[in-house]
Length: 161
Image: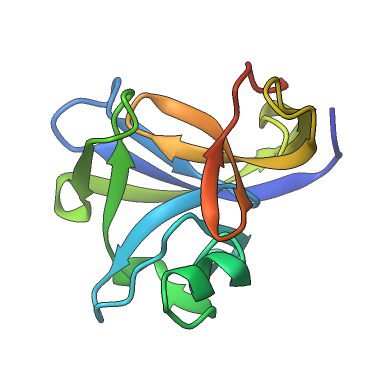
């Protein structure tokens, strides 16, 4: 258990079927989110979730924003301004978009002990370098992601539980 107490989580529950098309947004994890005003995140890190708003960075790091020739920013939006989630498929090269119109958004306070770690350190099997990985929501669950030189690098092993 990494912490005690509670945390606010956003749940996207499919209107047609609650399983398996339910996604959650948690603090510390990365997401590709589209907002109604045209802003979007690229591996944006959720800094905070409240009962009515989400605070998320535009990119996983300022270096990634520079590499994309974009401005690094922290956005604050009401939950109702989220228009879609872009989710990578298991191959990592193709993606699917989950439109908010197909989901009900529910906000719940949950016990932190029931959530996974908000990140972990691990050594690369190819370089031996130790990096900090964050969970990144994909279509079939979370996968670890880090940034190096403005590029996203996938975790090569199994995430810590």
